[in-house]
Length: 115
Image (cartoon, rainbow, N blue to C red; front, side, top):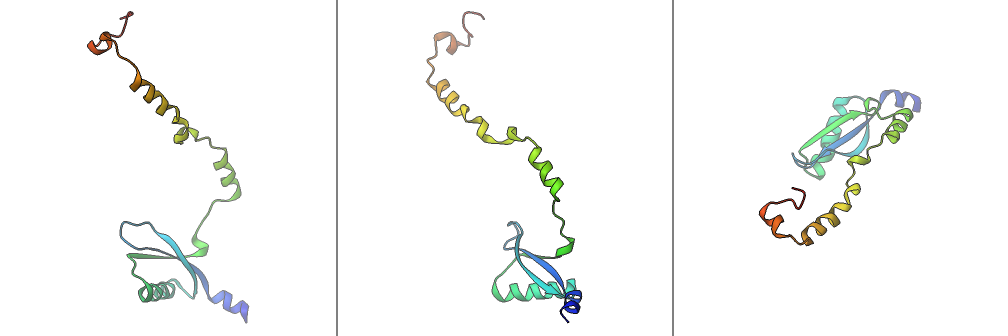
């Protein structure tokens, strides 16, 4: 009898957002015979407890994640140039620049002896 039940019901994931500007967040999973019934069950749950701006109901088997090969590929991509930790020296460089004493040539726009 459990096998028949599993074939009839599908697992749906429910995502919601509280305001129009907030992002969608996973709220809960539920069992339902079809997408329409899953949406009705999700609305019943939210309208009783809290206000939401929008709800998404997605059949779990329609959600695709990365497979192991794709996850390994992401680890191999070098994106350190996008991380701000590499720019830590700028604070010291800016401080040194601000503490530098300017000569008359600097103030008048000259570059020094080689200009």
